[in-house]
Structure formats: C-alpha cells, structure tokens
Image (cartoon, rainbow, N blue to C red; front, side, top):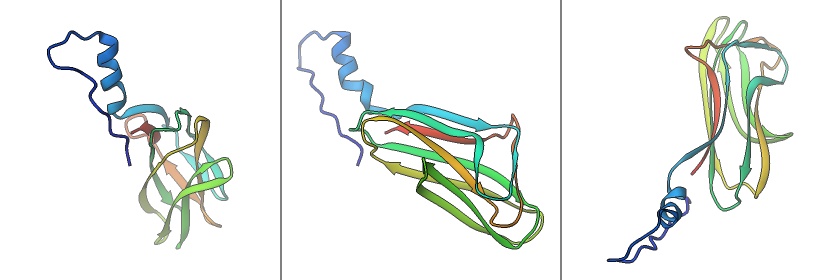
Amino acid sequence: MPKLFTNTFSANTKIKSAEVNQNFTDVSTVVLDYGEDTAGQIVTTEADLTNLDVTITAQGSRYVRISANVRYVSTDGPRNMTLALKEGVTQLQTHIWTASGASAQETAFLSYIFQPAAGAHTYKLTGNANGGTMTLQAAATAPNYIVAEAL
C-alpha cells in the first residue's frame, strides 16, 4: 500500500517553507526515470529492447510502479510472443500473447507495483519471438516506452 502521510501543521501558527515541503513532497507520484524507443527493433530470440530500461535509486519506504507500452507486429505465426520486465536476470512481470499469424499487430502493456530495497536498481524490458520474428513498431510521435514512478 502507498504510504499515508500525517499533516504536522498546527492551527494559528506560522510555518516555514521547509515544513510545507515536509508535508507535501512525498504525497504525489514522481517520475523517477523514463526510457523510450522511437526507431523500432527486430527480435527473434530473447533480447534486451533498445532504450527500454530505467534506473532508479529507491528509498526503501516508497512503492514504485513500472509501466511499459510496446507496439509490435509478428511477421510469422501463429506463435507466442513474450515481453518481460527484469532486474538483471530476475523476471518480475511478463506479458505473453499469441500472434494469430503473419502481420498480426498488438500493443503490449504491463504494469508492476512493488517496494524495492533501498539503493540503485536497473529494470529492463526484454522481448522474445520464441522462434518467430517480432518487429517493434515505434516513431517519434508514437514511441514504445518504460516509466518508473514513485507512489
């Protein structure tokens, strides 16, 4: 669960900006890092998706949400396609879909909410066409992306 914050203000007293910041800095969603792909990529076997990684420094007390959106076309099929969120080799979340055949288009979205240990962490997306070919579709006006947010 996201952390609940207690208001420390006292009625009829003057407060300093630092006290305001103490009460309101941690209550909003904060973007920690963002990665996007505007060029696309061809994937056949499991591969890191270019530019679709984020690095954060976690506080250890806040929850983090990592969300990703990837558009692709299967150039052959039918077969299973896999989009995975990983920290190193550890798989945290997966989106698996079955491409119905050649030229099957799909948008894969995944979201993962967790409370990482304090410290630096890098999270990445991998794709796998599982013996077929998956072409990621991206453009400057419609990028594939990954975003990490503190909740």
